Image 1 (cartoon, rainbow, N blue to C red):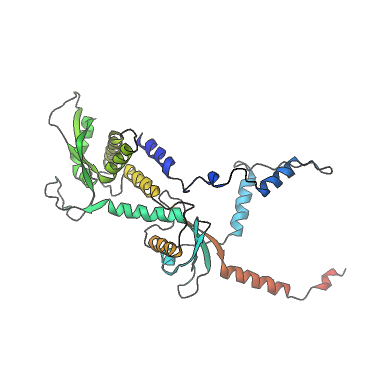
Image 2 (image 1 turned 30 degrees about the horizontal axis):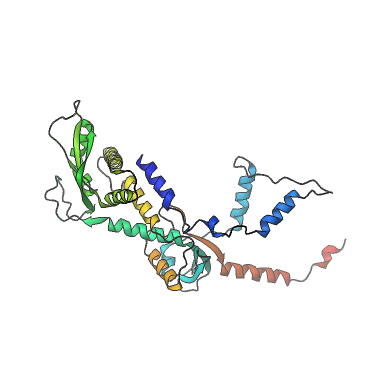
Amino acid sequence: MVDKHIEKEGEDIASKWRDDPKEQDEPGASNDDDGLQQLLSNWSNPTHSNIESSILDIKSNQTSNTAIRIHGTLHPYKFTKAMFQHIKVIGQVDNKFIACMVNTEDSSSEPNLLVLIDQHAAHERVRLEQLTIDAYEKEPDSSDVDSEESEDYLPVLKTSIIIPPVQLTLSAEDIRLIKTFKPKLHRLGVGIDLPDNDTKGKGCRDVEITHLPACMVEREAHELRRGRQSVAVTMVESLIKEQLDLLQDTSGASAVLPKTITKLLNSQACHGAIKFGDKLASDECVTLIGQLSQCNLPFQCAHGRPSLIPVLDIKLMQSKLQHTNDSDAETPRLWKLKK
């Protein structure tokens, strides 16, 4: 349920566009290309019958042949973080992309590859990594945490007190896992008060969630401000179940953010990111690319989509043009015309 809610929230705010592109066109505005296509589609050729254009079918050979042709026309590139250290920002394109030149060879030569960087994906990546850093804090003192090993230097998620506490009913097996992995849950910012008695029978107990990760509390407050239904209980149940299952499967060897927390941060990163249609000054483009160069994963947005695409290799184009010119300069082989 929490996944559906987060996905619904993403539909509301995750658009790349600042405004709906359809609303940007003036009412009644005509498109010459559309008019020409309409004219051709209605025209009856008196000599040849009109050939119906085929539909690209994933099951047909047409798809694979097309893919092969496209692959054959592309020059493969391997992008590394080192390329961002010598990147040259050209400027914004169509209020959507930032044109840049990067060097795919050695850092001493001039940049040769023109790339377009998605300004929304780039800013989303910058925000996600900063939000992830801000979500953590150092463990001040673990002396009151029931753990056999020191956790003084291990990062923990920032936590917030829940008033009133969230009430949950958990099974005896869940209670056992919580007691076993309580230090792990503590590092995730989850605080649970366990009663001593069986309050529901058959081993089930009512527990109180007293602390939650700060990012989850912020999401709950955001939902209430927008007049939506509270999602605190749903998020808590999803987080605890997900983490207990993971800790049980890995015998406590979990070192990644839970999926529930990751989705919350992804949604938050997308919500405040630069959109398509936002005009950026030259210095803002340089600043954004500089921030992107410091990211751990600068080549993809928070949702895993690529943030840049190669457009033109200047050196490769020059070499092909030179080869073409050299070929044209050759002496015509007139002897081939003789029979």
